[in-house]
Image (cartoon, rainbow, N blue to C red; front, side):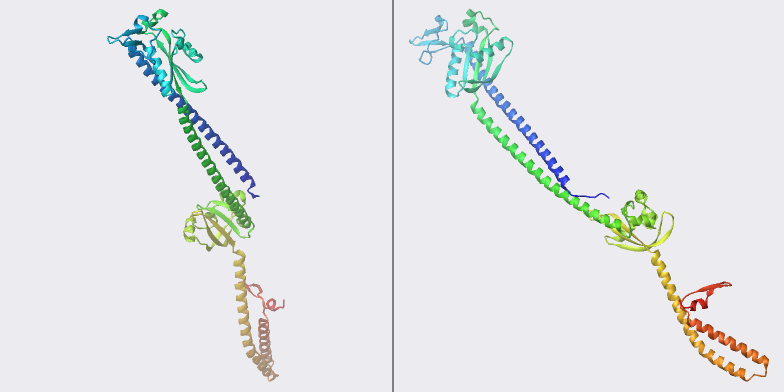
Length: 462
């Protein structure tokens, strides 16, 4: 029989399982947090690109409108001086009232809008080229790299880059030479469709990074709370599992003790399920019925006693039930037994099995038979003794009268012989009744048609 020595090993295993689950849970949450933060970072950059494209598209629309008008004239001022890089003949005009106006072409307008935006919104814009007319439009290192990619066929170039130690989302698209552009750039050798430079915009990342960092902090807090909740759930589950295993071991130990007691019981015990199929039998059962542990699966209680298992369930009704019946061994021998039955209930108190306790009544029945026989003999002996006592008195009288009668028949030999026989028969009867009064046991001897009591042996002292 398997024994249980404690629950240290299962507890160690539980701790290892919980540790492995906690580590796995930590890895899953860490990967999830990393992926979410990476996605947030990508979304922030894409939002910056979208804002940069929107700003750039608006600049391009302004430029296209100005180019379509051939430029516009505005009053000359400190903010808008005449543009020295334009055609001198068209650069300045004077109105009829004497006001001087300077020509603002798409590049001049774009530059002024970028300067205004940098002061108010922090946006930075720049028209640049690898071959600029205006020295201020020369490309920096980042813009040079972008312009070179346009020569390779790329239509947009963007990345986060630092300007004066401040991070910006910088985005540039190529400037395609159109018919309206040739009035200023034809001298540089450009023709319609050529890439003559690029229009860039720089979106400050600080506001977007602040929003993104808040989102990241919320994500980390949420993941931290979910992680902590998971660990608490694991700890709670491990505690309940440990308690459950402890209860299982306690039940196992109690079951072991119970089975040991059952195994060592002198009563023949069989445990079956609800269908009568055997689950356990003890040594005494095997000795009584001729089974051993290898026969466990073939033992059928319905073959041992003539009884219906379902009816036993109905009769027991949660209590113990007993009856006397005849049982049969594997050799086919029948013997009387006292059968006690009790139900096995599950956690919902539903019957799932029966404990059968068989008590061999053969010896008890034999003792009962012998006791009854002894009582019968005792009564018979007492009755015979009483009868003999009552018979002895008249026999004594008869014997005395026979002696008197013989004394008066001394001359008649035939009568004397007859009286002597009567006297002898009377004395024999007295002897027999005397022995019958001394009978203390039941002894028999063979007779013609059977056996009769042997008075001599029955009256002998033990």
